[in-house]
Image (spheres, rainbow, N blue to C red):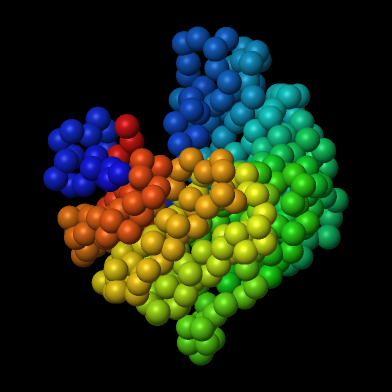
Length: 374
């Protein structure tokens, strides 16, 4: 089916229109975090502390004591350099039995301070770190004490932090159930492959947001890039992001098609080995800029995926969601032509297929999209 709420011609029917980062296209958790200035603290389970909170920093500790059911806390757009020197706040945070810690666009003195901060919460089940910055130079390999998070099950990280998580830095990988890796480089693929092989008994969800740039001469060699297929036979949920802007990926159009085809080969491996997969949901995020790999070089790719996901080896499969990120100057109406092509080539999936379009611009080197929730 087509999600017409995301077409510019249908915006009048949409209940809400948000300007958001590309990373939030699927991430709605930020909607659940509330500011500290709340009316019914006994009902709150998740709060956020921003750069300029409604409540003065000195008063935050006593407000935290009112939140008897607090499970998750998010720090967003804040400097954390001096948080360990604010004794009352630091003590109040350290005594919370938190299940989730979310750090977004935060500044730490160095990686050691970041790790020391995470170690303060041994009860964590989920950790999310994105756009982490350091006041000093880019840190080298961390050699200090590692956070011990025996209950950690879910991680959402970018930069070198997701690699650290996959190496067991934050807790045993044998207990991880959900992993989202942001800004994955192509030379990291072998490490991801090893991680997937080691977690076949416990990992149920894996997302890549998104594969990123490789340089110059190397990029031309990736036109025929085909590493060994991933082991995906144990996953219930899989999310992949094929970035659409050649300048960012370092890949030309044909190579992007090869990349998408390689993911399909990883799924096809399940059928060839006659393995019964628990896969229930697959999300594919594509990009549409001036050059159009979705339409020009797709060939029978979508028909192959349609046939693949309706095989007996995928008895639990419920949903294929395709999201097309339409960068300016490509119009949303133009992107809808690609959605119709995809739907036409996937007749077997029927109502299990949803194709959406989100409209975006590049601002200060970062992609932002008009994301309509509803």
